Image (cartoon, rainbow, N blue to C red):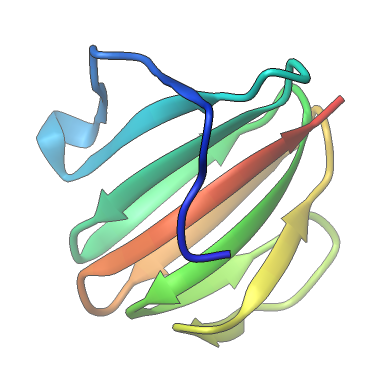
Length: 103
C-alpha cells in the first residue's frame, strides 16, 4: 500500500533520542493506528505495549528481538515485535519505516 486514505494524522511529532528518531501517528476509521517515521544512524532501544509490525520502506539496520540473535534488515523487509517487550536497533543508514500496532 503506497498511500492511506480517509485517515487522521496527529499533528504533533513523536520525537525520540534527541530528534534522531521521529514519527507521525496515523489513525484509521476502524480504530487501528500506525506511525510513519525516520530513524537516523545510531543505536536505540525501544519498549512495546502492543505487538508491532515494522515495515522498513528504505534503509539498512540490524535488530535484536527478544530471544533472538542480531538480524540484518533492509528496505522492503518486515519484522514483528512482541507485545510488552524491548528490542534494540543499530541503524546503519537513514531508515524510513511504517509501524503497525496490533491490539
